[in-house]
Image (cartoon, rainbow, N blue to C red):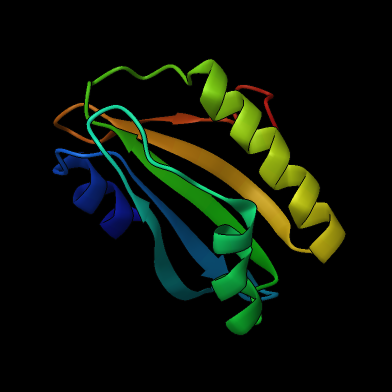
Length: 117
């Protein structure tokens, strides 16, 4: 996760990545799902879970950045998270968190810590 923070904190475009985890919550791989513009990245559940299924992930952590430096999730971020949670439930893949990386020092907003998962 720390590598994802460092990587996303330096990006000038919004990117959405997933960290795939095994049953013991050990990392299997990291997948860049989408690279977008300064203010958005197009993310579809099919693309999020395609590689999670291929890697036999038991759980995922979703991570995206806000190059604007804004830490709060947008209404679109909240809607997408709910859509992805529904898909994960059908696929029996746990979503451990959705993190938003912002600011030059890699500060983050956790959906789980804020009761949004």
